[in-house]
Image (cartoon, rainbow, N blue to C red; front, side, top):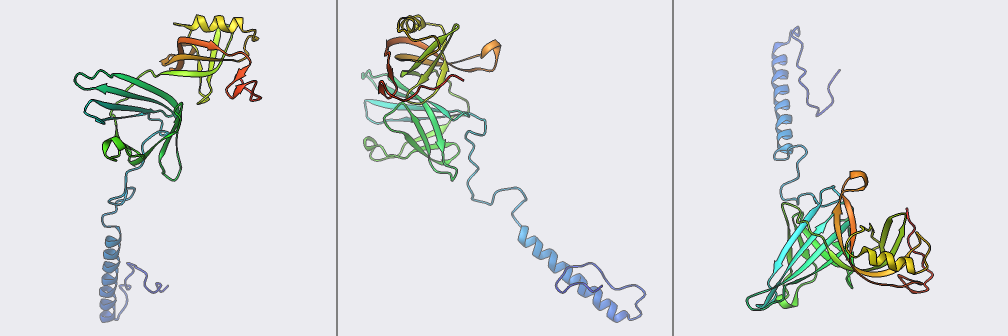
Length: 278
C-alpha cells in the first residue's frame, strides 16, 4: 500500500527489486524525509519537557484547600513610635486566625494585640483572598505568589505603600482571644457556643469562667439544650477530641459578661432562629 502523501515512514524498497538505481534513489529520499520529520519534532518539543510549566508562568497556588495550613507574617513600621506585626493563619477548613500586634519603640509603651477569627475564601478565577470575621469590614489580600499576600488597600501612614505578608516555613501557632456574642447552650454536661458574627461553632471547655456562664444559663429559665444569647471574652484553643480523637478547636470562657434572655443575634425578639444542634 502506498504511504499517504507527507507521512513519515521507514518503509523502503524491497530487496528483490531489480531496478537498483531507482531503489537507491527511493532509499535516499526516504532517509531525507524521515530526517526532516525528526528535526521538526525536535523543534516542536525543545525546552518543553512533558508535565512542566512553560517558562515564566507563575507557580500553582499552594494555599488551603490543599490540606496544608499556612501562616503569613509581616511587620510594618508605620510611625517612628510604633510598628505593626500581622500574623494570618489560613486553615484547610476555610477558617482563619488573625493577630494584629502593636509594638512600641523606645520609651513608647504601646504593646498590645487584637485578634480576630472568621472564614476566608478565594474566587475560583484566582482573585483576592477575603477574610470575613468580627471586624467592621472584610480584609482582602492579593496573591502575586503562593508565598506572599499583599493588602489590597494601601496604608496612608506609610506613604501609600502596600504591605506584604510572607509565608512562614512553619505554622506560627497562637490562641486567639476575642470578644464574642452568640448562643450558649448547655445540656448533659456538654456546652456549645455559636458566634453571631462568623457562625462558627465551638464546644466549650469547663475551665476558667465557665461556671459563671453555667449559672447564668440555669437562672435564665431556658430549657436545657435551648440557646441563650450571651456576651463573653474567650480564647480559642486546640485540644484532643473526644476519647483522644483528632485535635479540634474548643472555646474557653475567660470572662463571662452577661446573658440576654429573649434576644437573638439580630436584636430583641428577632424572628431569626438560632442554629440547630447537629
